[in-house]
Image (cartoon, rainbow, N blue to C red; front, side, top):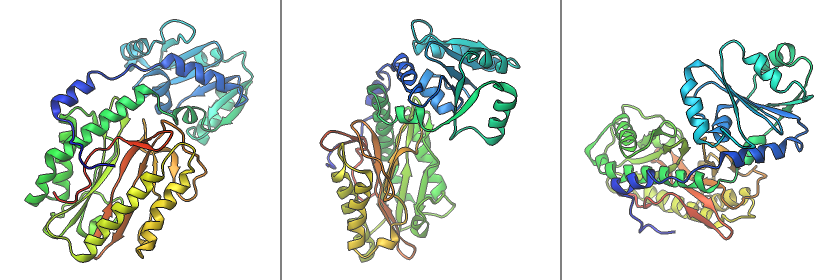
Length: 386
């Protein structure tokens, strides 16, 4: 680990954003088809929009995809006529063995999808994303002659390991976040409210090329920083505050996630120790990462440092999580995780200590798992000075 890497400048970010690697959507379709038999399905109905985006490149708010071993039907409504044709065309799904039949319709969705899977007996549904009401509707009205199969994690498992195109987007998102914080962190000395600073940070990320923040930016100062997921308030940041900044940028759908804790003024002895202990714990967690390592062991590495300092009860959340198209996705990095890390998974390491009378400290990087360790996407130095 190093604190010597400077964030990218806006011109460098522009160049990086213009050179994102192309995505192999046809390969993703083929990989999904190869999973159908393993999940005992003859077809799969994909309704979760994040999974649809990963599979087809479509970014609209309404669609469904029926996938069989030799067909792919994409259905959306008239709001997305041009967008669907354009995005699936750019994804390479307009021709070849993974060609999609694109249907733009209103009321005929049921008939179109039913016809696409008519000769497939076992139809998989995404159990984690289908409501009970939808399940009843599919069984009673849409597919009364089919056996409906509750599948778990079919696409999510395929999304666990990031490909080159995904990693370039996540690197770009992390670079935008790094650069944005570097541009505005000095403003903490001017006494802004938490809301004001969060808005300035979000605006700067957009100005540097993000489509938006990857979640509601956390700015927790003073006692608010002792709430791990504090929402920005009208509290004014003042001398003597620890300020927890947890935020990320979205680039072409992919998220970054980082936390830095900034000290405004001189820390008292407890605050200084909090900063040192959490930084040490985070470094221990990062050092524990490698392909083949149990995710729970990364959590243990962080937790042991904090427990040795006497603050085990003040570390109140899991150590980390996966990141990708969703800000929180598999694998979990927690004491109860049963996951073994693999090359090119992206996870966070974010231990924290929260003491209401002194504030909170959390330090977080997003990291790509490698064969022998990890590569940090987050390059912002961990110094606590504004």
